[in-house]
Amino acid sequence: MLEKEKEALAKRIAGEITLSSDPGKTMRKWREIFGISQTELAEVLGVSSSVISDYEGGRRKSPGASTIRKFVEALLEIDEKRGGNVIRAFSRTIGSDLPTNAILDIREFAFPVTVEDIVNAVKGEVVANEDLLGRKIYGYTVIDSIQAILEMSSDEFLKLYGWTTERALVFTKVTTGRSPMIAIRVQGLKPAVVVLHGVKKLDELAVKIAERERVPLVVSKAKDENELILNLRALVEKAEKI
Image (tube, rainbow, N blue to C red; front, side, top):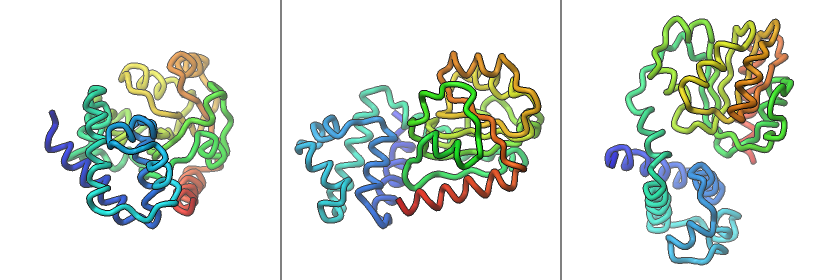
């Protein structure tokens, strides 16, 4: 099943851990991306959950190559048993050549932030699912909604998620918010949060879709796209220092 994609993903995870200034936090990030508990991971590795906790908390020395390899293999093994959702999501991004005019910025966080952090960065107002502000975010994509509609196919829209759907999709040049939310509803993949910038009058249907899909919906009050992107990039830098 997706052997080439598995190998590419394994190399990416191992490389990030090896090169990280804090390998334990990077291990935790990847474990959480896969949605695997410390207990479940420990069972597959044949160690106690306290060992995983010690690595992630920096209480054990940096893991060696053998430990990293076993860690990565365990993540992939558990994901495959669950249906390979993370591996499949990663495979969609391989060889991606997305319209540069539609994507204004795309970044991954070194360590996860929360929806609330995104809200603060974009000077946002939460209009749906405020109870999900603690949801973890691993990246963001800022999209020119007009260019996306004009240039992007259905398959290309899916690739906007990067390699994980646990990210913020930020749509600029939005008038009512209806079109982005309908597109998300139709595609069947849910971002962790949607941010709308430029809204003049928010469409009630956009809010209803967000509520039904359980996707936090945020209206950004940033003065322009430049401020919006600069604030998000500042959040990336802050996450690197966590």
